Length: 430
Image (tube, rainbow, N blue to C red; front, side, top):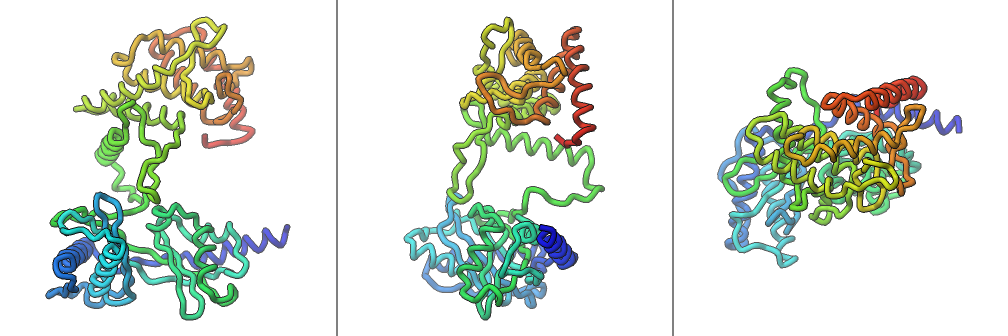
């Protein structure tokens, strides 16, 4: 075990050293990518019209020496109808070749459209690969995961004259883990493991939604932001855009489409009640904090009412209730976040007695030590031992600010003493 851990540590150091110089995507600025999208679209138009290959009359100086692989995906109504790749080679011819390959793929599958105007054209230009000092014959999962930055890096496995590659976008589209992708590439390459090598790379990934529209860059959700870019204005803008996104995801029943499955081009049927409650609280907070919020307020009230309809009295506990879920795992975090959402929109979310019933339910879960049990009966799954009490404390704080009582103050103080001591014993971000 000691040797194993030492080997992992040494390998991690080696990988970290290799990653000190990150691979770079091809040298393409925004105008270059927009031109490549225009070339791809004209390739689509000509091929659909007469099945011939487009030849561009113009190749700007900035692109004449750029060489890379190119992957083109043709979409209609956001669903892929054809995918093609070309290269490595000069980027303009490679883009045309990849586009034609995608169109031929669509034609082969009887999905080639009659017109090109409404096609969405997605392009991924692959940068140069950087070798990783990694033992492909005996892969260690911890080292492999550390070697590839998920969503930013792609990687290739090379053996002899053959190379298998997975682009950053494929991790999302195919719902791959790094380990799954590595296993698939190594098993299909043919060369013995000892002769294989691992490389990583980065790409430019963008799409043009329709003819004459500007391109849209595709990047992983978490990106580095310079300190100077974090201002009150940019934060307000980010909050407004996220709130609009939540409204876009809201269903007619008030809940939110939970998770998009890119591999099947549909929203997942899975639900997480606590996350639903969190989205409700976020939307209510955004509606309370911004102007011109009629749509946001309507969405927040619709979401809160969907959860208020699930409010149930606790048997044998006078005036106490909790927000229930379909799976009967009636978690403390669910009730606490809906209570917080209701405090964000107090004049539009029903009778104040509903808030008092939820507060009474939360107080009923508190033990003499100050600790909160983290689910209401009949649930026996006590998850969220760290984070749900924090939500409950925040909810009790809001209730006390609105309606001060000695009972709530005593419960809050007892919980604070208990969880401060817990944090000293076992620090937890949650």
